[in-house]
Amino acid sequence: MASPVNISDEPLTPAGRLFLQPELKTIIHCALGFKYHMDIDAIKSTIKSSLMINHPRFCSLLVHDKNGFEHWRRTEIDIDRHIILVDETSVANSGDDVEKIVNDYIADLSVSTPLGSDKPLWEIHIMMEKKCVIFRIHHALGDGISLMSMLLANCRKAEDPTAVPTLMTGGRRDWREEKDWRGVLMGVLKMVLFSLVFCLEFVLKSLWIRDRKTVISGGDGVELWPKKLATAKFLLEDMKTVKKAVANATINDVVFGVISAGISTYLDHRSPKSLKEGQQLTGISMVNLREKSGLQDLKKMMESNLTCRWGNKFGILLLPTYYYHKIEPLEHVKRSKAMIDRKKKSLEAHFSYQLVDLAMSWLGPKVASLLNYKIMCNTTFTISNVVGPKEEITIAGNPITFIRVSTSSLPQALVMHAVSYAGKVEMQIVVAKDIIPDPEFLAKCFQDSLLEMKNAALANL
Image 1 (cartoon, one colour):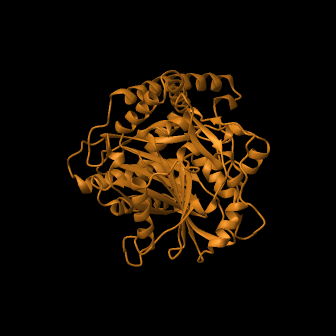
Image 2: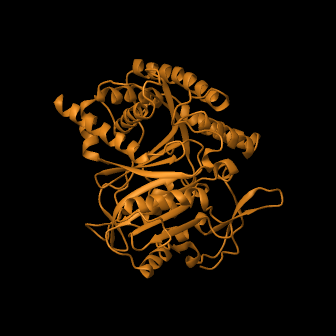
Image 3: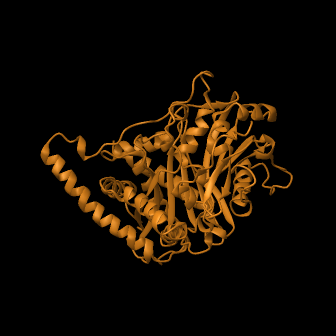
């Protein structure tokens, strides 16, 4: 592709600059499994004709001006420099366990292989024998919603090779939809009250208040420790069964309930009788702040030049969970739903976004990154949940068997990323292996928790 010499350098957004700070140099890893063995020429051809290559972020170098400010500079794309064929003979031998081989490879990438600034900040690693492709994309290029939209723009439905995947979109309900003035007034009062409480809590967590230490706590410098990666697998239908058993619950409520129950089970196993009943462990959740809550139609976005929709547009919610030695399985979901409902009524996510934006503008990226880093050190885990396509999809005619996402460079010892795809939900569990040496057992705790909730839900029917 010819370099567009008539296009001037574009400054990075505040959020983009944040992810370039040493403490927060985060890389997103998206692993795609394929049904058939891949043709390297077909992969290159698909990439060359994709919307990704035409997107400014994916064909720009990161450069610095004389004052040290970061800019995007358009450049030529050499596909061969971005495609890396993995030498699978050098990958740790795990027998025939393809999932473990791929997870171990990604775990090693998370701490040992940064993206070079001599080319646009993305790579595609191909494991031919394992029928797996790993996209490595710097978080400065965009958030999970942007990048999932980018991926799906290059896919087609398996049942109809001419149709693009169904993009999940939707609006947001809030108190302004209430028609009764009493409902509007109550909604405003709740929003103000919850916002004051949660925003104050957010500031305190950013400065000095931290969770009590447990066997799964991370901290300063843990982002540099060796990692392990495991996958927890769920059926979306099981989650829907649990969802129906709890009035007005959502899939997100169920996911967080599963995490709450699974962590309690794991802590019972690792440190029995060492925690007080009801001890709080705080999680961080990244919340999409776009007007449309689902995946974005990338083609329409680029055609209409709505650049404000691309990039990193998310806020942070603090999601407290609590250790319980033994409670009814569905109680975890009920308590998670009550807590998340209060969070939804507040402006905490918008406050966190504006706080970082102001810190970037007035105090500079070092202070802003320190605030973000501090709140991660003071909490126990991070959880994200992205809704993927409902149906099976293909790339270059090859059906995708799984979509798994993880990230690098967080100081927490436990980071989880869930993606739904074609009736399944797969959650990547990234851990600091010197703190959590058995993430496979933790994954089993999550899976067993959902099955217990499902059985309890069926028993109540």
